[in-house]
Length: 110
Picture 1: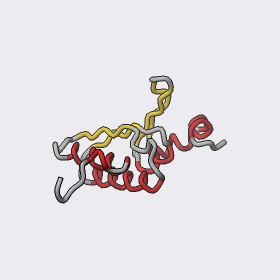
Picture 2 (picture 1 turned 120 degrees about the vertical axis):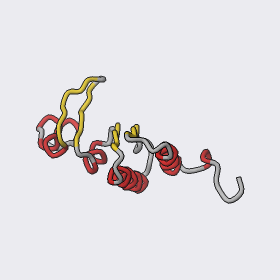
Picture 3 (picture 1 turned 180 degrees about the vertical axis):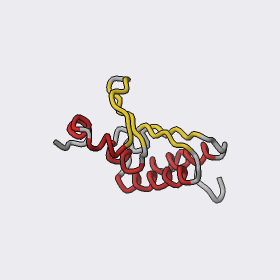
Picture 4 (picture 1 turned 135 degrees about the horizontal axis):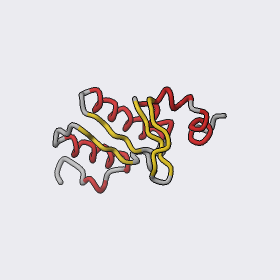
C-alpha cells in the first residue's frame, strides 16, 4: 500500500484508533468503544482517552465499556457498575467515586 500502512501492521493502540476512525466515518450519533485499554501501555491509553473525549466534545455520544475504572472515571459523566452481567450501581461518576463499596471493590480505596 504505497504511502500508508496496512491496518494489521499497526500497533495495538494504533489499530484501536483506526477502528474508532473507521466508525466515525459513518457519522454515528452513538459510538460504542469496548475495552479500549486492554493490553495497551498507559501512554497509549491516555492518547485514546483524549480521542474519546474529543469525539464526545464534538457531539457524539460515547458508550465506553471498560474494566480500567480509573480510565473510565477520568472521562465519564455517568457510569454503570456491572457484576456478572448485572448492573449493581449506577449514577454520575462523582457519586460513584464516593460510594464506599465501589471505592473498595474497584478503586482499591477504603
